[in-house]
Length: 195
Image (tube, rainbow, N blue to C red):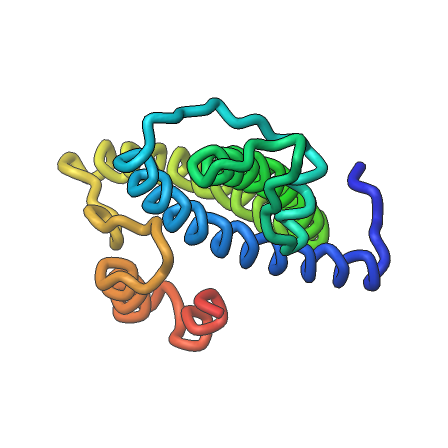
């Protein structure tokens, strides 16, 4: 079972989803700029360095802090850009994972909140199918009975009409009018069934 969250906790999650979505977008845009700078620096520098990053620097970047090349990190322009690029990639990965968890939790809450309504409609839908199948079997038996007694084909009022779907197609409306014309149903019965 999905644990219930307070309204305040849900609001905090929604705010965090919005913040992470915004920051990921901003960091992706900044990563494009960093890549352009890296390409320009590589054209003018022979130094290349596999920069390292740490999780604290990545999380600080998610919070909005700029990348700062420290003594532990390279200080040449190219090395600083490589370090920033690596930290940006780590920050985007961490933020994306957090965002994914929060969005999954939100989706679970939404489905759980609507589950009773979903269950009722799905149950009703399946039960109607069983009822329709039973009606169709009875219709088949009746058709054979009429055909045998009449000595020819046993056509019924709504033969040849597709009666499934969402209820707004022309064939279903034609079948309803046919039932009214044949005195099988009244207009008010048809309207009640449609609602």
